[in-house]
Amino acid sequence: MTAEPSAPQPSPRLDPLPPPGTPLRLGPSITLTPLPFGGAVLADGRSLAVAECGERDAAVVDRLLGVGVPPPEAGAGVALFTARMIAAGWLVPDRSS
Image 1 (tube, one colour):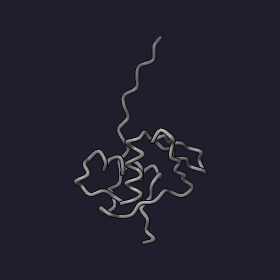
Image 2: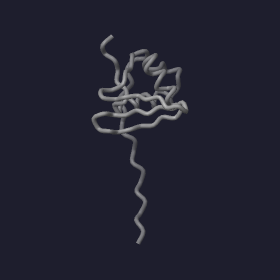
Image 3: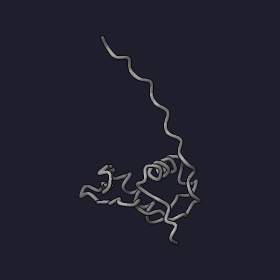
């Protein structure tokens, strides 16, 4: 007897992004470690969750940390990536400035 494949689950609803230019920082207990090949690893010290980023994604994370929330001109892909990083808690808006 074979199990029926499950239907794909809808993506969780993402909150709207903060305004463009809003500074971002690593979430609480998140560490960013660059890898020798150009990627990076994000690690959550509380949950022990780990996310490995390839070169392209690591460059986007670096840019987000340096420049903040991207403008709409950056494209839908970058906006979605940013929203997912914030929703997962890897990045958070920096309200200290």
